[in-house]
Length: 233
Image (cartoon, rainbow, N blue to C red; front, side, top):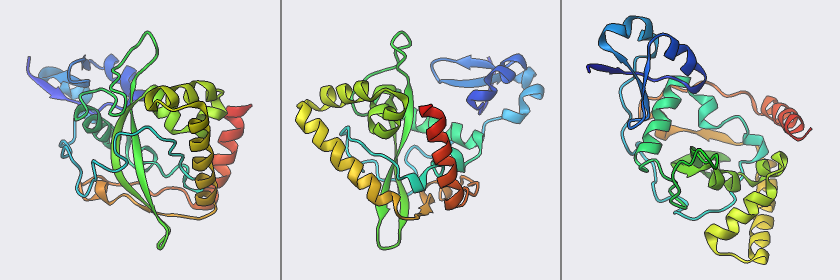
């Protein structure tokens, strides 16, 4: 079959499917038969991104599982909120495909029964001299590793115990080691949250990805507080 690949955002998949799009489970991408492209042209795939983004450090953070909470002052400056939905599909696809669609930390694959999927996590470097939050790497994580990494959000969702258990199991840590690590990570998060950070997404822009301007820092703080309250209550 002659296929035309599509970049279909997750929240538009039903609309694309109704217009004739087909899902390729092996490629994990939507496509259109040649004759059906007219109704699906809006999702025609953009040129693929390089497997390794320009300047990306694929070793940054290693393969360890650690709590890596994004400072509250940086909420809503994640990659997904700073790029168009179709660009996010391209970014997500390269991160997952180069990892073989398995978690780069624990090696787990997708398990629908246990509600384990593959997700893209951003690893950031925080440069104190310039107060710059620099995107260094994209890594494919399973749902459990991603939740443990964003431990603060796991707490808000009521999944703290599961996140702690996963941290211990993957790292072979004792309860004391795990709690010490979480305490250190939380202290670092609080310190970083006091600053307003510049955003450096050059590994994306140098690959030809167009960015959307993120909200101002003051607005992000207000939204972050509101979202935290909505999730908690």
